[in-house]
Image (cartoon, rainbow, N blue to C red; front, side):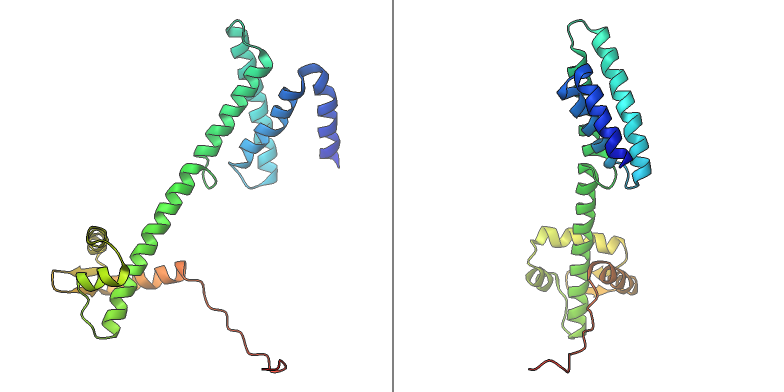
Length: 196
């Protein structure tokens, strides 16, 4: 309630002084930028206040330093630049962080698929060759070779032209990846009261 009252007072006081665009930008952009950097409400409010003050000061200084620049529009442009920077580079929610997280997930998933396929072939007492793995996984030869070489560097696999073998370190990594990537199956007891 206090926050809503302060917001309403800010709008009522700010509209005649600064105009609709500046008030809307200063109410939305600093908070949206701060939200990208933190998940705690207290930290977000404090950061939004600091960003709003910094944006206002930098925009007003740039407008005073350069003739012909309207103050309100300059402040809005600075606030928009801060938001775009936050949107791209903030950890966790930024575009760069999400792209890197997706790349790491794809790499882990491909490692899991490779190690799991080798383990399945060994369990079935079949020879795991590069041709068999490429056929099972549906990967191109270049993609398979790159993944096998990376697994060899980590000492997960032993590979030559004839056979690919899963090493003890690879079995441990497979267990870790399985816990991380494969959701656990929920044990649902069949309901005896329900009719078939």
